[in-house]
Every structure is written in C-alpha cells, then in structure tokens.
Image 1 (cartoon, rainbow, N blue to C red):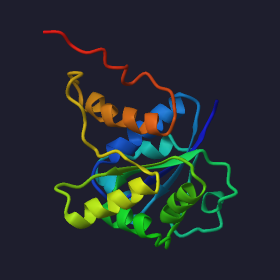
Image 2 (tube, rainbow, N blue to C red; image 1 turned 60 degrees about the vertical axis):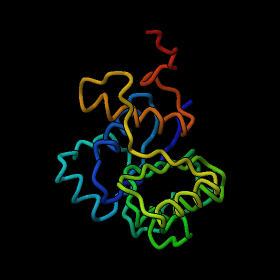
Image 3 (tube, rainbow, N blue to C red; image 1 turned 120 degrees about the vertical axis):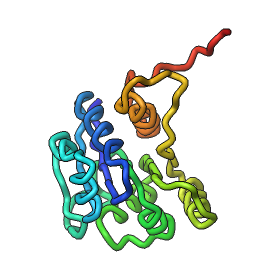
Image 4 (tube, rainbow, N blue to C red; image 1 turned 30 degrees about the horizontal axis):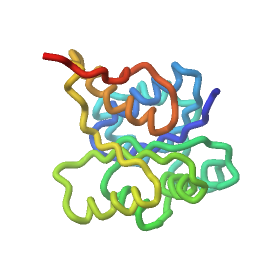
Length: 186
C-alpha cells in the first residue's frame, strides 16, 4: 500500500541519510514530500546531495502554513526528520511550531501518526537527552544516526542504509535493507 511521507531535513550534517531514505521510499512506490530548512538547503548543496530533490514529489517552503502538511486533516501517513538538529528537536519537544517542519511534526504527534527523529549530534548534553525523552514519551521514535557495523558494510551507502532501515521500520514501511538478524555462531 502506497504511503505519503513527509521528510523534514534540517541543517545538521548528514543529508545523505535523507537522500537515501527518499530514494528507498520512492523505489517502493511511496510519496515523499520534502520540507527543508533554509540551512538544510545549504548543507544539501555543500554535501553534494542535491539528488535528494529528484526523489521528492514536492518541496514545501518552510514558512508556508497553507499546505496540507500543516493540517491534522491531511492524509499523510507519517514523518521523518532526517537529519534532525538539536534546535529543531527542541522546538518539536516543546511544541514551538513556528515553521512548517515543526508544525508537521506536531501534527503527527497529535494525530498519533509515526514521527521518526534522526538526531545528528554528538556528544549529547543533558538538554538534548531531556528533549529526546519528551519526544519518546509523546510516542515519537528516536533513531540516532548511529550506523550498525555487524553486517560488514563495504560502502558509505551501505553504512547509511543501516540507519535508513530503522527509519523505514519505524514508519511501518516494509523493506529488504536489513534482514532480521539470525545470530552468529563462532
């Protein structure tokens, strides 16, 4: 079943995570609706990830509250903020919906739709952790950009896809990126 996903992208480094997520969503026939912050646009360009735009069905202006994504009556199936800066995480966790990206996240929370946050910061301070806990308690999924190495990835894309697989799973989207672990016997 085709899903409609909002993809928020902030100015945190790691826009490759957003590009790979959008690519996998589109390759499975889902819709991707992008909301980049102004700084995200600069980072996407700097990190040479402009292909991200090609995978998206639409790109919304961060200040446009008159689009469907701003309303609880919209038909979106979930949202991922990939990567998520600590500033955006703080706004979402405190309900400061002063732009479309944060408003869309707020809508997902109030409508009990999947909201996946991929924080891209290290180390975390106590405020970061408290904000993540608030979002977790509000039923958001916190999926740090901490790739898995136990599958022995050989490319950056394979490494990134270990995080993307978790995001897809938390959005309730089937994928073949990371088959169930069957264990390893020495």
